[in-house]
Image (cartoon, rainbow, N blue to C red; front, side, top):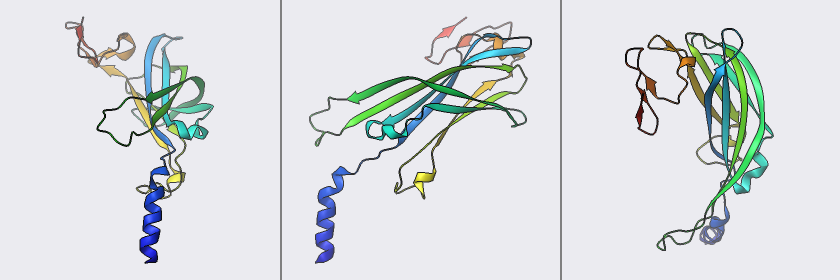
Length: 189
């Protein structure tokens, strides 16, 4: 009988448990021009997605690692401070959804620039977001884990050094076929 009573009380309060931790992140780059001799400049954007109840996990800055894609050796690290914070909420739902969930996220942007030497292999960028709350069922010791976002700056593609591919493209052909396939599906030349 006690077990049934505890189960009933637990069911009553189960809807007040929230997942209060980082939900995801992205790390992107944009080529912004040639740097000093043999280098390129990039704008790095890191975004962290955190539920509105977990703002205590917002970090004032992020630590970005730059690794040589060929050797996997760490080239450099740098910090980027928080640039912008945006709240995103879903307020309207289909009438069939009952009870209406609370959907609220804070998107935290960190935007900075880095200058790195041109190389044939390119670079791997990394950012690690701290933290998760204790007690996430499907992650052992969840409070000791975060989230790692990565991005790859390619080196040479089709005998073209990446820095000369200045438009945002998935792929660019060789000098005889300079077609750019953009992420949104458009083809440009």
